[in-house]
Image 1: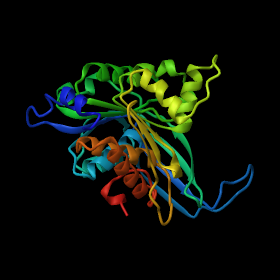
Image 2: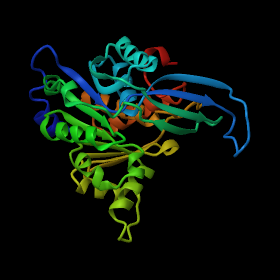
Image 3: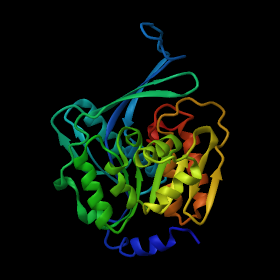
Length: 322
């Protein structure tokens, strides 16, 4: 039986009420991504040529939402976009996939942006600008929709106010709550994230993020961070399932009683690793919605991540798929 079965029974018991049922609601920073593809990163003061340019919808939770939409899931998104052309393009892109955008707030100002440089190996360096992405108002959230969804998937913001709203939702709503804190694990102490982490039924991290997070927590201890010990610490905080993505090494998954190492599928050509972890999360969540065992959820996550790195950009919009 799936480890989330007990959670599913408790948290989905009211999820089929009414015609407005949603499979997943995404909640996070919306970005317009611009990616520059080069042979290698330039040295300081050096000029090198750009081989290709890509731009499109981005942001961790938004990427995961679009990949889930590609499975035909009924989706909605909570976020904020600017009044510029990028904001219009973001909302239009999500609407084109049938994603409910009624909880996306239009705010005067610039839409959040991510500027990435991707080398010939598909590895990328990313620079982010938050813009109006963190300007979330509780008034924009339709709590009745949240009462009738199966999963809420959140990624972190650059400031505290929207994260407090995420904490309130994680604490009070019946949906399964999954969380991908991303690079904030490196930039912020665990105290800033602990309330969200402790309420996470599924926590997605890469190994570097986990170790950085736990280094903050254990800075006065001689704590050797590895997958098993780090996951045990996170499970001790209240996490239901810890999912660690490990790049070419695949992923590690544990719920405390079971653990699995899922190999990464072979990919003919890696084009761009942007959003690979977000795509993995989408596949894993899709497996949860299908009531798969957690090992099978991980395998589906890996297959979607492989599809992601075989194309440009991190989203799963139909227009972007290979």
